[in-house]
Structure formats: structure tokens, C-alpha cells
Image (cartoon, rainbow, N blue to C red; front, side, top):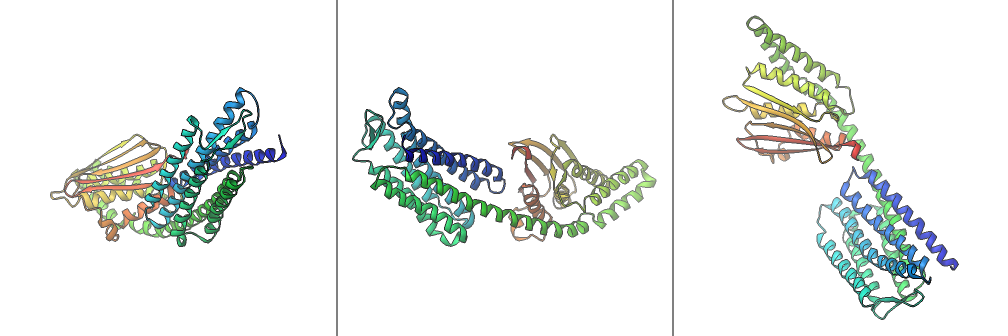
Amino acid sequence: MDFLRVVQMTIEGWGAFFCIIVAIVLWQTKDINKKKAMGLIRFVLADSLLLISDVFAIGFRGREGEAAFYIVRISNFMVFIMGYLLIAAGVAYFGRVIEYRTHVSVKNWRNTEYVIAIVGIISVTANVINPYLYDFDNHNRYFRLPYSGIITFTYMIGVVLIMALLLNFFKELKILEKYALFISLIFPMITLFLQYMHYGISLVNLASCVSVILTFVAYMMDYTNEIADRERERERWISDEKIRLLHNQVKPHFIYNAMTSIYYSLEEDTEKAKTMIKNLSGYLRGSLDVLDVRECIDFKKELETVRCYLSVESIRFENQISYEIDINDSDFKVPAFSVQTLVENSLKHGLRKKNPLEGKIILRSYKKDNMHTIQIEDDGVGFDVSILEHQEGVHIGVVNTKKRLELMCDGTLDIKSEVGKGTLITIRIPQRGDL
């Protein structure tokens, strides 16, 4: 085996190994932007399979024997197939980057690229039955046939489409991304031309390896910036929310109303007064204990504060307001006051606006699809969810809670409400063991 072939196999072998390591690293970063990370994972894994296939194609080229006969043909077939999948994965990834930055759909670009990939794959597959692109001699050596230019042409069209996509949204890219992404595209274009003019070392495959490295570097730079921005925003929110929570969560009027109810119950119903004192004390203790906590707290601790709050309110309103707590999952963390704020919002803006005053709040938790799910359901007056976008002052607690869930635990908050029927709030928090 000549020296150049050994060098190329070594470089491509290390390139494939690097791609696998990159995929593992990307998997660990997917919590920030899952679609973007998974898109790049598919891109680098496609390149890894391409490089591995080419290592086998080069290593067994010209060898005799039945094993070499099949390995050479299968590996060369895989090189061409993975080349098309690599380009399709590339446009899918870069398309996601553009959509994430601009909120503009590039679906047509992706679909066009997919059509080109499908045409290329069909062409290469047809070559297996009736060779017209490439074939092998009696010594298992690869050689081109008259229509081999079809492969190069379709590859170049695929790369040109990616370049057109990036040029169209050039201003949306960051300066270092512009250099990295265009070098990663121009290099394959040059090598495709050189490869077509002179067959020998697989320059295109080496170029794809360089492209993956540069794209990964650009991604990690963007990821690092996102982490830094997210942390700064998180710190700002935590600092701002601390003061707001102190004034709004331990509400004086709630305490005054509860104390008044206790005062009148002391003579009429001593047991009722004792229950209210116990739960009011539990509510105050749970609220004050977490005011200085900057991280998420155990859901069990938050749940106990909510239990105390609902108990006090239920007794205070002479059981016109009832509640049900159905907990099947509690081993996770939530931002302090997050569930409490939403429960209070349901009671204040949902049940207490009913005439006559009556209603029920249901709090449940469970695991589903690798998510800790919390639901707060009420049969109150309901509301138009769109007002959350235009009247933040009215529902500032809900808006801020949604933001805190996103920043502090990668959680989501979804609200479904129907006027006159009630509201369902759903919180979903990723199971950390599954990230």
C-alpha cells in the first residue's frame, strides 16, 4: 500500500473519530437549543460514516479475494450515499441556524436540497444494477464511467444551495461565523472541481472533515455566547425578582384577612382557628425560608407552601373554594414561588371572580416523556390567553414565572383557558438524568 493511501486513511480515520467525539459533546449541549444541536449531530455523524466508508474503500482497493470484492463495492456505494446525506444534513442545519436567528422559514431551500439528495441516491443505487457512473475492474480497482460527472454536478448544486442560503441571510450571521461557515463551504467547492479534474486522493472527503471542524467551532462559539447571555439574564431576573417576591408573595392583605378570620373563629370554632394558625404559620415559614435562595428548590418544599395557602383560603371562604392535590411525582426542583404564584393566580383571577363564589382547584404532578409535569386546573371564569402578550401588568406574576422557569430549569409553561369554563396551566421540566 503506497504512502499517500496510508496518509489519507489515517487522516480520515482520525476525522471520523473526531466527528464521533463532536457528536457526544453536542449531545451534552442540546438543552439550550435542541433542534439546532440535533441538526449538527446529524451533520457530523453523516460525515463520520462517510469517512469510515472511504477508509474501507481505500484500504481494500486493488485487493484480491471475495471479501475485498464486496467490501470495496459496499464502501464506495456508502461514500456516495453519505455524501448526499451530508449535504442534506448541512442545509438542514444551516437552515435551522437561519430560522433561529430570523424567525423566517427556509423550508423551500430544505425541500429543494432533499430532492437533489434523493435524485443522487437513486442515481447511485441504479448504478449498482447497471453501471454507468463508475465500476470496478477485475482487481477491485475503482474507475469512472462516462456519466460520472452526474455525481460531481449534483454535489456541487447541493453545496451551491447552501451558499445561496447563507448569502441570502448573510447579515444575520456573526462575524466569526461568516468566516467559518464560508470557508467550510468554499473549500468543498474547490475540491469538488479538483477531484473531477484529477481522480486520486479523496480531496472532497478531506474537505468535508475540515468543514465539520469549522462548523463545530462556529457552533461552540455561538453556544458559549448563548450560555453567557442566559446566565447574565438569569442573574438579573433573580436579583430583580427577589425584591418583587418579597413584596408580592408574602402579601400583607392575605395575612391580615387570614388573621381576621382566625380572630372571629377563636370563639366560634376553636379547631378551625387552630388549623388556620397552623397553615398560616406553614405558609409564612415556607415563603420566608426561600427568599434568599438563588437556585431552584425541591418541589416538595414548594408543594407544602401551596398546601398551607390553599388550606387557609379554603377555610377563610367557608369551603366555597375547594382543592384537590394529586401528586405522583415530586423528586425534582422548581423555582421558588413558581407553583404558588400560579395557584394564587387561579384562585384570585379564576375562582374569586365567579358569582356566586364557588369552585375548585386541582393540582397534580406526574412524569411523562422524560418530563416532570405539573398541572394547575380550575373551573373559574377563564380568560383570553392572548391578553398575556398585551397586558403584562395584569398577569405579571404569570409572565415572570414563565420566564423564571425557562431561565432557571429549562422549563416551559403552557396555558389553555376558555372563558366561562376555566383554565389549565401545564409546567414541564426536563428530567435532569435524561439530558
